[in-house]
Image (tube, rainbow, N blue to C red; front, side, top):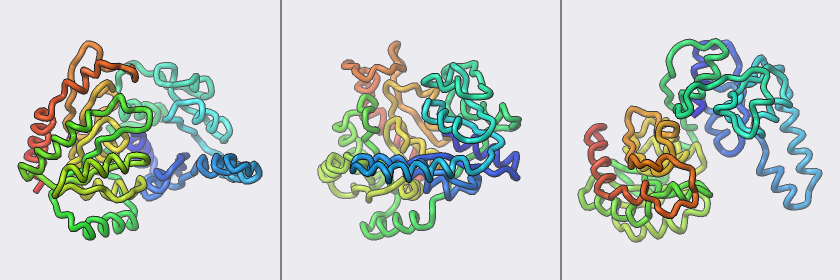
Length: 334
């Protein structure tokens, strides 16, 4: 959700050179976006893996190469969209004018590490709009630009081979019944997803591919087997490959996850099932989206140990199915 702000900077100041510090396979995705000139990768996996094996020398070399790359340029500005202590410390190590969020949006006292802070006026501001405050502080004018992410050619080819090999024809819906580790409190019940799949298939709305991530393949496979004909288990994907797969689908159905936002910026119509998280801050940033949620006095909340789950258990299969049917009619999926 930082990408629109970064793209806006590049569009207004095309001569600037943008480097993006990131970790994980999302770096490969960023490297293929035309508004990003350079990707600096934080080697967390390599360094921690070396430490686990007791190879302290290798861990030091990995971190040394990373820090050297971080200090390689004299940056005119270091813009911290993340706003946590880790990102603030990396900014402190690099050379440049450090800009970040003030107390309202910063976490872990990260605001203490910036030369300039940008204060918010509205706590419940969507993160895409919140992130735009930083480039506007620098001098950006204009609206939030539309964002259409580019998938690398090899990722597109990988997904095409999967779809052709499984003989999967459109219309195709992507369904993600999972959430990230530690976020089970955001998940709609798997049995309701199963019934939703049955309704979609009985009424021949589309074929379905079930998405899954690390540690979720077994549960996803069981759901696929129980759902029968016309329901497929997604191929293993990294972030660029997942984007390519989402771009091949006619609709995304799932909860509040990073995959939901990737689907929105892939241009895929989204039906999002929201429970305790704040839709005003974290909703899909797309005109082709529908959010299903319950307006309860206790929502939004951050109580991961809630046993009531009224915000999620109150959402029926009928409500989600009707939203899916309406979205298909609205977007003209065929």
